[in-house]
Length: 383
Length: 124
Image (cartoon, rainbow over all chains, first blue to last red; front, side, top):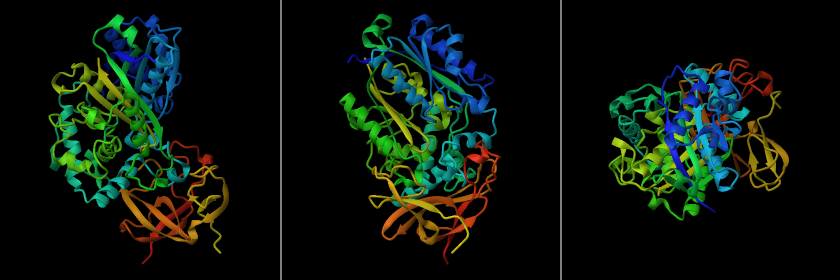
């Protein structure tokens, strides 16, 4: 099987944007075509990662709208919805379209428009993924984070401050990301004294609500060489699910989908956790960075908090995590996030990450939907 | 016997129990029976107090994941707690509530699901 290459990438400014979903998608899509040097009529497939444009904005059918706006007809289009992991699922489907031979040029655009809703309304749209037995109790994704964070801290005797240090680290990284919603450092006291959202977690343990989009261009490696000498390859990719009903897991601090998706990706790439030099993890909540760092095998269960305390995951540490600023400071426009994670790893392995650059030729991105319900893990290597 | 509806869990042919029930159990076996969890007490596994609640939900909203022991078989549930004075390891009982959340205010169709259910109350 020929390897699948990524030959171009783009992302818009993340944050509170005036643009609506059609415009956001078109902006990232047009910039990705230009970055890759690909003509719209060369696209065989065009995928849109988006969770809820209908629920947020009343606009459905967004892949067809994007195809028309970019003059990409008659490319095959589809919308990929896998909740918060729609972006990573889009990467999986784009990879599959090339790997299967069905397409020789696929563009993926992920985007979401959210900030026109109140926090309560946006939280409810996202909470609608839950089972009716959960939803009627007013369960939200932040409340799952509070439940799990308490159990993690209690089980592993980890200090509350270790979670705050994830926020401090990722905000520091985000300062150097011009696309980030918050290019602003926060200190430990600010995090620890911020208002409680889901006890024991506080405001700065949570990512913001965000508008934005990001895009990637995929083709077979043989085609990539016709366009550029500087491309990345997807050497491993895997997707997996865990229970829909979160409380049915015997250990909520173990994310089964993260474990399984990374195992599949490592096996395909013939690599292991020790080979990864930079990673983007889905830090929708600070606790998720611990659970995923353990799930993908960087650290043993209950040990990730120590790595953060020791600076291992800082940008100048042994294993930099979330050099982009993560969802925490970059923002989390649902369908765009998984695409933007791969954008960051792509820039890192090509040596194009500017002030955020670390020494890395192999990188990993894990994108999580729900509370670990749906997961995809992608491993990229520079060529 | 109470007139309240049961807190209904499914028992599968391999002996496992889940709340809520599913057409197929965790290890692929079919449901053979139901269990009313409101007849049992449970232990608090973890809890949180959610301050940022969605439309139609009480604020603050204290929630817990609890584990019932049904004749040696563990089964977990998640639900509202009657108080914010709760700790990991507390024993709780299920208390019926006819409206846990106001229907028709949030995004879900009011007719698509039930809105009554059970809260957990620490046993003194």
